[in-house]
Structures are given as structure tokens and as C-alpha cells.
Length: 348
Ligand code: NAI
Ligand code: MG
Image (cartoon, rainbow, N blue to C red; front, side):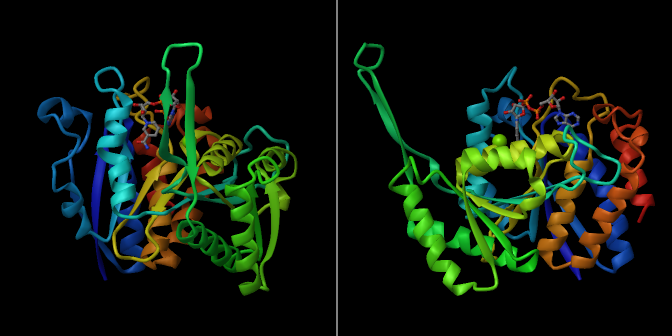
């Protein structure tokens, strides 16, 4: 079969890591008997400075005919405010395509130790990607006076809570059968108690899945002290955001953190991207770590139904990371973006 892929390299190292990730992608496609046709879009801060928009008005329409989107990173804070680049490109795609699952795998690849003494670390964080604490509802009154009040309202709808929890149960079922549901329902007595209620309702439908409830503070500590007791972790927008940054740190840093913004219903394309940004401090030097992006490509193949190719690509990544001296400088190695990508392709 042939897949059509929309590429948005974006800014800074986004351009380097997307170009590099295409090399192992082509190798794995050849090996597993499918092909990938890609179209590149120059949507970025550079485009904004030229035209006044991060992407054209019909941007979503242009993407919608593709099977998936691979994004590098957007942002060039020296010239374009981050709120402009984020709200002009990334957020409209996530929201417009109803990519309500943000899936972030955190595990230690061979050869990578990370900051913990534990060697067993394999956690899948599933973060609600559309509402909750990031709904934007609220405001400020009496600004600048001693009576000033700011309110930020977290919005949780049954439809959104149910679908993200259901996704978590399904993932747990396909892995260890263990699901951790994250709240702070002792302190937040409306939204989080509601989240617990929906969790209990769904648990009755999934008798084969063992659900454990954790409070966000306790599970944050548990990521560090007892990660081997966790497998699939489902959380709200804010809590999932925080947990997956802890996960990224433990797995060796931003250069390893992959993510998938998934529209499980399949009505729109899903988007795959490394968690890191455009890294202006190392842009243009050819030394950005491409592993997070290649890993995101593996997530994309999984989503497209190419399970064997997805697993093969992750295995190939592991054979390269097993010798950290070959990796990029952020991992203490002497490799470049392109040499690492070429080695992953060769390992296929
Ligand atoms: P950043 O992730 O770009 O960089 C943070 C630090 O990590 C830097 O020292 C950088 O060199 C290093 N780093 C990141 N990725 C790396 C890689 N693959 N290999 C080696 N080192 C790597 O975060 P920062 O500096 O806060 O943001 C820079 C720009 O990127 C901003 O405009 C920000 O808004 C944007 N950004 C975009 C994201 C996206 O497109 N999804 C996500 C995060 C930030
Ligand atoms: Mg974050």
C-alpha cells in the first residue's frame, strides 16, 4: 500500500530532524513492502514573517487529504512571539482535527541509563488533548489593584472524559492489563471526582483491566521511585503534560521524547511530532538528536496499521542507542543528526 504523508518541518532543528527521519522511514518502508509519498509544507515562523500567517487559511483542508502529518517543531522566539506560533499552527491542527489523544511513550532504549538507578522504565502516558485545565475559560477582574482576582476554569465534559479513559482502558488491555488513572480528587472535588466516577463506570466494562487511582503528586513521586509498578497512565491535559515531562527526563531527555496526537475515530489525520521545540541554541549545526522524531515515525506506522514496521524501526533505534558514543552531543556522543539517522536506516 501507499501512504500519503504531510510534512511540516517548521523552524530551527525541526527542519533537520524531519529530513533525517525520512531516511529510516524509507528504509523501513522498502523492507516491509509499502511506500510513503510525502508533501512538504513550509508553514513556520519564516512564513509568518513573510506573509503574516503561520499557515494559509485553507491549511487544515490541505492537510486533511493526507493519511498522517509529521511535524518537526515550530517557534522562533527572537522574531515571533511563541503565543503566535503556537496558536497559529499547532493548536489549530490538534483542535481542528479533534486529535484528542496525546500519547507519549516513555521507556529506556538500550544503552540509555537516564538519571534514575532503576533500569526498568516503560510507561505510556495518555494525555487528554482538548479540554480540562487548558480550556481557556476564565479571566481577570480589577487588574492591577489590590482587589485583583484571576480565575481559570477547568472544563471536563462527559464526552471527552469518557473517550480518553476508554482509550486508556483499550491501551491497558493491549499491554499489561494495568491502568493508572490520575486525579487530585481529594482537593478538586468537582472535576476530579467526576473523572473518578467515569473511571469506575468504565471499569465495569473492562473487568480484565486492573485500575489504580493515583493523585498527581503521589504518582509524580512514583515515576521516580517505583516506575516498574506503572504501565499505562491516563491523565487530564495538565496532569498528563507534567507527567510526560518527568517521563522524558527519566528516559534521557528531550531528544528522546516522542509523541502522537491521535484522532482515533479516523475522520481526520493524526499528527506525530517530537516533544522538543526548535532549539534555536543548536539550530543549523546539524547536531540535533533525531531519535525523538524517528520514534514518532514509529508511532505513526503503528497508527497506520504497519505494526511490524513500527516495531522493527524501534528495534533499529535500540541497536544504535546501545552504543551511546555514536549518538549526538546531547547524549555525550560525537554523531550528527544525519549520521544517527543513517545508522538507524542501516540497522534495518
Ligand atoms: P526546546 O525543546 O527547543 O529546547 C530546550 C533545550 O533542549 C535546548 O537547550 C535545546 O538545545 C535542547 N534540545 C531540544 N531538542 C533537542 C534535540 N532534538 N537534540 C538535542 N538537544 C535538544 O525548547 P525551548 O528552547 O524552550 O523552545 C524553543 C522554541 O521551540 C520556542 O519557540 C518554543 O515555543 C518552541 N517549542 C515548540 C514546540 C513544538 O513545536 N511542539 C514544543 C516546545 C517548544
Ligand atoms: Mg509539556
